[in-house]
Image (cartoon, rainbow, N blue to C red):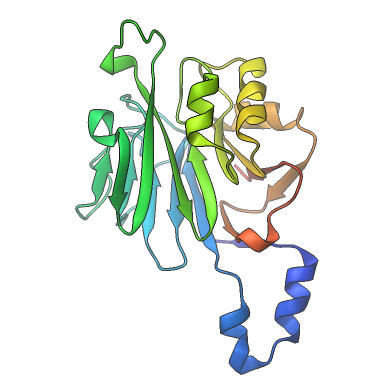
Length: 236
């Protein structure tokens, strides 16, 4: 599988000037993000810990989930066949979903916050709940929105705080204006749109800065994050 490193030229130059025996210590830590299809990603830290998001059932995406998956942590934002296939991996990871995923939890050396978003807080329905997950990987704060039915309130956005990497649903429940509101609230430096290929292409056509990835994998490091929001779009 092909992948690219999303880095700035200055970082590349510094690494290239380092002596061989020092290079491994000066090189920035990187996290690898693999897009498996729809809202399913495999995020691998520099220490080798793997976080899998929203694994889908066959027939709900144009792709199939890969074989031999062995994540350490599985994040399921909502209960649907597009996001809760727990039969796809071959090991016994920690799974955060529903009430188990709410609040702050620790797994695989990672501190993960699950924030429950419901359409009507006065009448919470577990089947309509969406968990927004946030955590820090290799010095980068990531936020996986899942598929919320309503945008974030000011209080919810404040609990999450500013993020570096935002996994943003571009199809589904949120309107274009509501998605823009979430981006404004969380101020991400990189946006990874998620959904079906057509929805991603349509959203990206209206975004100011888009970096297209040849393939379905990218390496990210904190030192090379852009100052202005950039959308990373994977090749279908």
